[in-house]
Length: 68
Image (cartoon, rainbow, N blue to C red; front, side):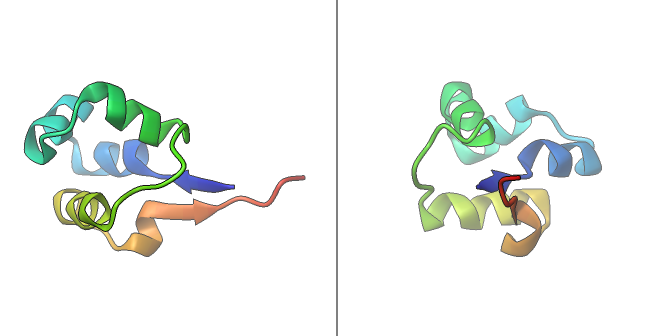
C-alpha cells in the first residue's frame, strides 16, 4: 500500500490543508481523498505541485507500507 504523507509534510511546514487547496486550486474533498488513499491515481501535475508547495521530494511524499 502506498501512503501519501501530505499531512505530515503540512505540519512540518506549519501549513494547513486549506492553504494547500488554495495554492493548488484543488477542492478539499479531492485533497482529503488523496490523503485517505481513496484514489487510484495521482497525476504528475499534482505530484509536482505537492513537492513544490510542501518543499519535499517524491520520496518524502510517498511511503510504501507492506501489509502484515
